[in-house]
Amino acid sequence: MIKEVLFLLITFIMGFLSAIPIGAVQIEVATRALHGHLRAAISVSLGSLTADFIYGAVAIFGLLPLLKKKSIMAYFWLFGGLLLIWLGYTVIKHGLDYFNLERPRKRLKHRGIAFVTGLLLALSNPMMILWWLLGERVLVELGLVKDFTGSTGVTYLLTGCLGMITYPVFLALTLYWLKHFLSPKLIMRITVFSGIFLIGFSFYLVGKSLYLLIH
Image (cartoon, rainbow, N blue to C red; front, side, top):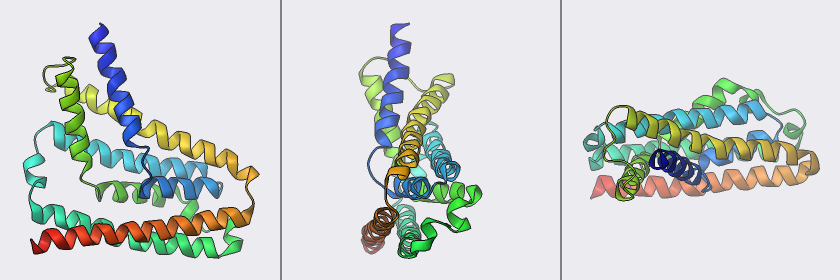
């Protein structure tokens, strides 16, 4: 019984910690929450979670060899980089338009667009497969589980995903509450900075893609 509880607890914690580093998904969640669109912010998180679950299934149930090919990984990086350039541009555009803070456009509010945005951003990061495999190794080394076949693998995926969704939802709720205490100009500056960060990170992904394609 103790092993089962530790298995669930450690898996949840690893999932939660994996969602903390600042990335494109967190920026999209923050942008929507700061503009007052809590449901859209959570929809981004759900889209990202869907992709993370898919990669988890790929890792745990044996499709990893396909994604180990350099050419496929290169196109994933390229896709992610181009997507971030577009998102960065739109975020900066919204940030520079002061009145969008009072009457934000439908793109930020639309939950369907938010979900797809989160899904595509997370799909552009196949390195999540390595996180799932690392978590698997940690749990095996701790002696909490012998293998991840059948229901154990499903439990691992669901518990890890629960941890992954907890942090962005907490982030969205916190920023949604804080927006009532932040001035519109400060929110505008935060939005513009977020867009610049996205574009800057996109250069890294495109460069990584080109490196893999050339070598």
